[in-house]
Image (cartoon, rainbow, N blue to C red; front, top):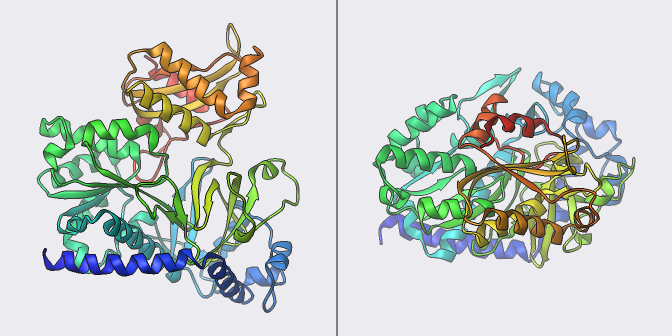
Length: 499
């Protein structure tokens, strides 16, 4: 075993012990994080506006600090961008993380020095946990690559600004610099198509052992790589590839595609948001993620059903009061100066000892054109089951309602780009529809009662979804196509690529 592997093995064991201690003290850690965060809040302009003075209780904090989104906090963010200190957090942000959400324009998320360290630390923790569990210490000896945003940083007004993944790329530990792919020059290319071609040229002859990125973009890289190299399987190009790291999309619908392209490799899910690092798989063999309770975030939760009622006041709970198998909107208070901040994600607790979660979707992403309120998690679960049963492969998909058909009943349209079509296509449709009906009783009642038809699949030409993403300026990087929407905007565009 080489010296690096000894180091990784030692660090992995120490890291596992530390994370286990964190699991056993989640509530205590959240109390401590809350106390620290609010002590700083009282010294900021935001805290003064809402009369945060001295030490406050969680109850008083929730009464005083409203739930906010980016639009509500943007005036304070703009003041910080213009160089005003102590607006949302002490001093000035070290960076702004530039993000373009799936439902809004460009956002500039404050990133403090503390939060930047936590973002980097959390990724390292997740990889060391994986190494300890899998005993795959040799991964450090090969190359690692993340398909990510450009590492170039430019000022937004008076503060350096860039994509979070790109900012973090500038802080790769020195002992890993030689292992990192692609080069900074290639990683800085803005044109995604050109960037992928250059990445292939730089990586095709390397000993790649770990790859990370959004599933559709990694699939795109794999397919172009195999085409350029004249190979059928990624393992023929990278025989030591053993780990795929992902976040930002449910992986299950894409698993068959990955197995065909890359063979048997391990998968590890992370939950890094520009606003904070929320969770990661602490056991790569299980689908849920450990909620990170000592990583600079105090969490609040609002039941999705209550949030959607759009009452002026909603009940906010913290970690101590959450229940299993309940969908919550996740609210963040962070050491970068976000307060009562709704990032738009919905989660569900699968365990409270330790606290583990799965992502169930986006609060803005649902279909309720007929009162059914179908969510991401239901769509993804039904699709993953149908794909597995029918041995098919998915490249990408999105779902939207058809409310005014020229003939027949309205219903849901599924736009799917297949890597491998199911042999029994009608059986696939039936199983997909039944899978959704089992999960959502309102959808089931609408179909059963003849109010809407069973779902319809529109098969797409290869590249259709990529074409849509390029049309809205979001091809590649950390961007992803919404997998469910309550209007026809994406569907109408994708109809141009129907087979």
